[in-house]
Image (cartoon, rainbow, N blue to C red; front, side, top):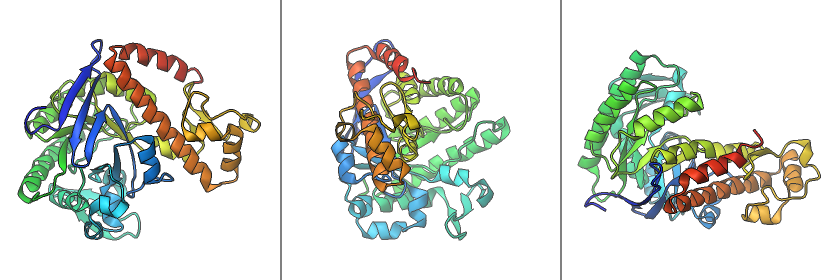
Length: 377
């Protein structure tokens, strides 16, 4: 690991760009590739921190926008940062809130200085600048913190995509400057974000400008925002190839096996998404032969595990019939068990990906996995 670097590559597939490595962070090493569960309000919904640790997660996410509005970053600072507030002993990555502001199109106004927006909670007015977003995440004592960026959706024209890119680059520079001026004993690592929508020339420009800032890690934003899978795969591979190999690469907002496999094949190290837990609460369970919807009547008398090949506590102790019963009766326990299973499934899936890379057979693993996983689709 080079001096000042937080990433060390350990192995490479040989037939693709897939790689394993470690990211050195204030609350311990993180093995990569890594899927990071999303805990929007400093909690992964329906999953305790002890369960997350039991599964084996080394890093989870929290959301700057939501925590800024409630309970507020000063209260979290007073509690000892996110770790003191939650009791989670692993690492925290906090996003900047940029995507949440982006999704509130009717409630926000973007300028060179930052973003004015109305709270989705009570309509109160707020302003986030790149500097304030750094200050908020410093109060959180985040292990990885993201710059404020402007995300372009699928279908955005080239002119507006360019505007978003320019602002993102300017805000990245301001974020780094604020971090360097105020970090003190704060050990968190800033990640810049590459934007550029679905225009390769803009992706190349954004990557060049973000790479030049020399942040400890780099994220690829603006993907999985409604585009066809083939477009996602093409733009991901193109963008990842523009990024330095000595830094962790993070694709924001992906959490299904197909999307994760594509990212790993392109040399991406980190990914996150609310999909596994959100869909779990709505009755979708991951299995080796593809996702199943437990709400379907066919599972009423199915006394087999959710996934017969899964060794998690949920699959060892509960049947599909019982899980369906819990779901149909709106029992809170269903959300807890389903979320645990989906996260355990993904964690084991990532472990198997790492092993396949170490053995030089990732491409074969990807093909074999997808043949079975997509059989139901």
